[in-house]
Length: 121
Image 1 (cartoon, rainbow, N blue to C red):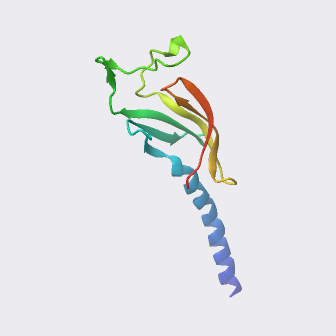
Image 2 (image 1 turned 120 degrees about the horizontal axis):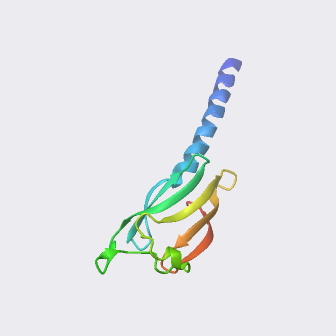
Image 3 (image 1 turned 90 degrees about the horizontal axis):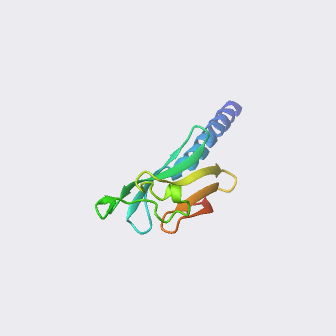
């Protein structure tokens, strides 16, 4: 009986990190924006940080040319294409809080970058 309890305890301890790892990666994948006009793919890098970039635009062209980041306050960045643009950066998963934090999110509609955290309800 003691041996069964030890095996059960060991099994539970082995699966807890896997569960937490799975929770951390819940944010990865392809997400449709709230407006439904673009998709953002979120991936994790080798340092367990999460980044996201635009991989699809409903209307990728404007006047026959690729849409660009024309609302960016930095004139040097206003000509970069929106398709492939990194919007989400440096998020880290907090298992204690159950959210992704310390990240930044860029809004190409107004050219502003915001501190941000993400959670699921």
